[in-house]
Length: 151
Length: 338
Image (cartoon, rainbow over all chains, first blue to last red; front, side):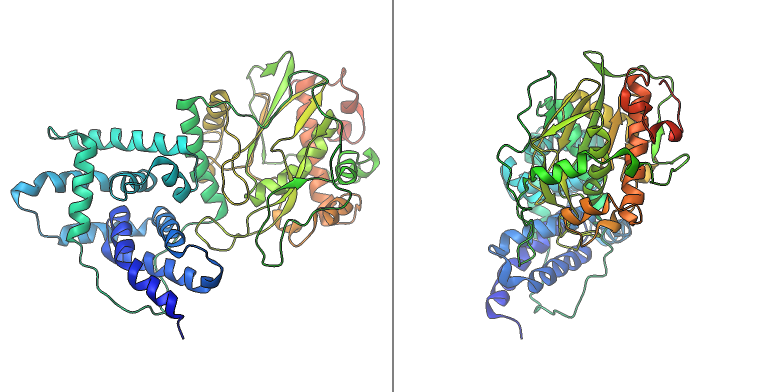
């Protein structure tokens, strides 16, 4: 039987985590699987984890950046299946497509900075890397993005 | 891009896509596992994090070397405040504690292995893990060849590789302030490490003094993936150049541990099977080093001899007594510039 408080965490956190994962991996199906994996890991050690939401965010982001290449096929399939946005939202699609071309670790930094609005030191904690690395990845991600859009 | 700032465009696109995503409210099913393949093996993760770290260091030029002896007499006396017993690095809950000072007796035991013990290790004729860099000028500091270590406390391969490296370096100089630690139990994403809690030393905060060589060590993170040391820009450049194709295979690019021997040779990854140290305490490993029949002695002592020989090829064999001692002379598979 699932612990009640775990259930609470699951219901409260899952939608946001799926969206977070989706922004990093670019596929809702893959995002849901990775979030499920994160909850499985939390479930196995729920009583030992002090801050379940923080644990989940770290786990989901790191799973997203280490999911293997076959994710790419699923992302492409979903991208093709999506309805094109209206002309007014064309810019959003263009930026989104460019974000999807970035390396996973750079994509993760962009999402944590511009979607989650996390400061650099918090992003470093989530990704398990030094703050200088975060700054560099962010700088390079934006530079890559400009090149991708101009292509 | 449009007239908007790139950051604003990214923010707008991400929020639009997230808002447009419909997420169902399914119940949690503990029996439903993920089918997505996840590559979070320790070696792979080490490579990913490290590559990013050194890239950052090139830009920021952070200076923070754990061990870099520049002048004789700068080290503290051995074992000044070290405990008399070996500290536990694992609690009953299986969670790792931070590194702790290594007992002086243990350090002494490892750094003073008799040459007759080392001489019994089987000699590997031409190990593929020792990679020569022929034709390169020696990298020195004040005339002393520079040995550079890049590793991390969480990494079990680093834990394994420090044993023979310390034995080899101790033949040329003296360590102070070595600490004991265990490699991580879990990867950064919560899956079990291949070789969890591998026991050994850490170079973080230690110093090394030698008349023959210069040793610089960078331990990038502790066993809980918290940052420790940052490489210099020069160290980062060396790492990025040589721990990458064509010097190593593509799949090994950026792997740690990385040992760079004065522009003469380098080692990427562990030089023996780290699994032979599993479930052993540091004291048990140290004891095994003196037992020629143990797999630990056969592997670690052999690697230590070969690293010693590699260092000898940079320091001038005639001027360095240890390079004339057995078993260094009989091994000597390289004969590079010695």
